Image 1 (tube, rainbow, N blue to C red):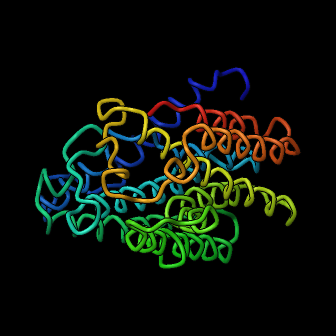
Image 2 (spheres, rainbow, N blue to C red):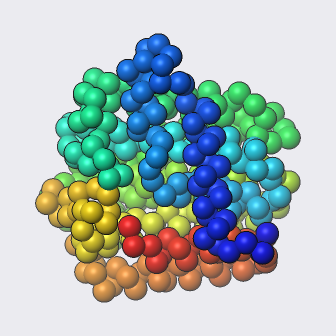
Image 3 (tube, rainbow, N blue to C red):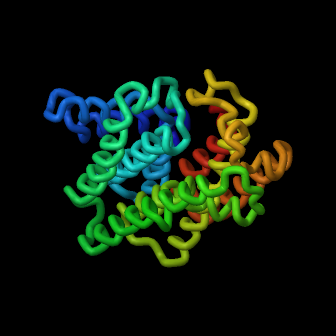
Length: 298
C-alpha cells in the first residue's frame, strides 16, 4: 500500500469510481433517454470524488475488499450529486455553473433536474442493497439506515433547510457548526463510517474514534470551502465564486475572518490526525487525505 504515492492512489480511486459509476448509471439511450442522459451528465466527468476517497481510505483500516468499497462509494457519490443538482436549482441557490459546466437545470430544464435528483437518490439506495458490502446482512441493513439518516432531515436535507433559513442571519459559531455538521458533514461522516464497516469488525472505541474523525473532517471540509469561496475565482473553483457573500449567507469567513478560519482548519486537521495515529499504517491514506482536504486549492 505504501509504495504508491498519495497522488497516484487518489488518481486510481477516482478512476475506479468513475468506471463504477459509469457502469451503475443507466445507459443514456435507455428510455426515458433524456432523464438518463441528464443523470449521467450530473454524475460523470466531474468532481474530486472526496466521498469515495474517504470510503476507500477508511476501508483500508478494516481491510475491506475494494469491490465492496466501490459499491458504497457509488451510493454516496450519487446522493452527493443529487444534492448538488437540487441545491443549484432556482428555488434553492439558483446557480448556473457546477464542476466547470452548466448546471443540470440550465443544460436541460428545471423539471428534468428535479427528476434527476429524485432518481439518483433512489438509485443510490437500490445500489447499496443490490449486493453484499459486508459479511452480515443485518449489518448491511444498518448501513443502509445510516445512509438514509445522513441524507434526510436529520442530516444533509435538514442542514440545507437550516442554511436556507439562515440567509441574512448572524449565526454563532456553535449554530454554524450545527448547520454544517448536517449539511456538508453528514455525508462525509457517513463515508468514513460506511467504508470501515465493509471490512473486519472493529472495537466500539475504534468506531467511536473514527466517527469523531468523520465529524471533524466534515467541518474541516466546509471551513476550507468557505475560505475558497471567499478567495478563489470562478475558473479555479468550477462554480460561481463569492456566491455565499453575494447571497448574505453565514460562513466561517464572515463570522471569523479569513485568518482565524484558516487557524481553525489547522486545529481541526491536527485533531483528526491525532485520533488517526492510533490506527498506525492502516490509516495512512486517511491521514494523507485529511492533509489534502486542508490544503486543497479548489
